[in-house]
Image (cartoon, rainbow, N blue to C red; front, side, top):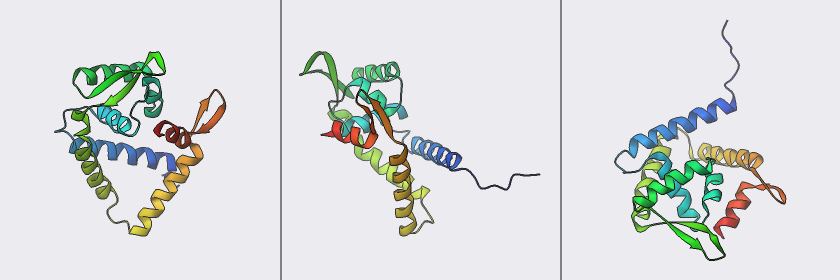
Length: 161
């Protein structure tokens, strides 16, 4: 007897994300960075000056993992650490010209992968898919702070400001 129940939302989201990530990595093999480094550059581009711990939280990676990636990226001239003007002990992270030059090619490849992934969907279906995913993310995205719980979207906007 086979299970005839519809696939679960969780499995579909995980499979879609895995396949999109794999396809993007295939399309980006000529860029001399790992997929983790590409993610770091993408996040840093939108959050210049962020601290390493906050970046780790955005990426949902362990701070030491991000530290090792950033160390290698600093050595490769892709990321720069600067002293935080408000805290002598803290460092802020910034992209370099070298890594910023990779953003357009990364975005172009991502757009091609997203187009491939959405082939066969009408414009209305695409808008509905995006709106539905944004709602799911909004419903589930919270981070714990000293003041309580707030949305990741709001926290990211505060970092971007």
